[in-house]
Length: 284
Image (tube, rainbow, N blue to C red; front, side):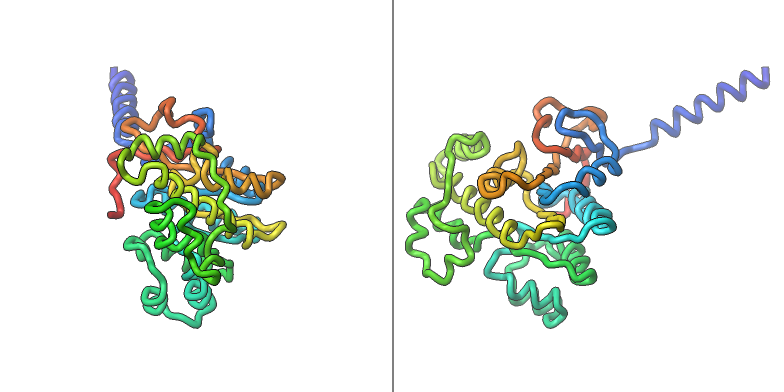
């Protein structure tokens, strides 16, 4: 009788512990199959360019960006880049990386996002500590706003020197790409045909500067909003137009109530899908 009591008690305690275990995220491949973090890293290490799609306010995205960067840096020479820095701020970013500009100076000379201190400073500081180049890949926002109001033709008014901060003109554009079509449908009356064109300008410019900074034999990790690279569109579409021979990988972020399986709507969004509990605390 005592043995039976002990066995029942053990089983109850085991079930209790299991019930108390809460996973913050689960990692899936494009087909919705669970994969280990280690397997993902092994795959990324074999690539030339990785696009890491985040939710800007998701702490799991930001934590994993730093972890992936550290672990890939252990086996590959890295290059980094981010949507969160605009190309006309490259000089200030370089000065900070080289140690000739303070953190306060970077804040004064670059248009840092409001969540920079918590979410992006760790990546930039890692690059500074380990002497890794970091590309400010995005188009200056004033030119994206220009396109949102007046289309691509409005870029003809941009001074010649400023065009160095933009992908070469004219910008290739496919309005039938699902991501651009969906953007237009989701925001009717907010820019019409020009809103997805502004998105395309950002995608094309980020792809342009990724390739400008890319060096054969090194792994380039680029951090961007998930919408800029999910479903193998956006930045990746432009990269493959210019350099189809390179080996690419994409990571994206999604949220679900139950992360024990991947919803069908999220399958195929990227090579690796970070499925985060939708109750996860946000950074802003």
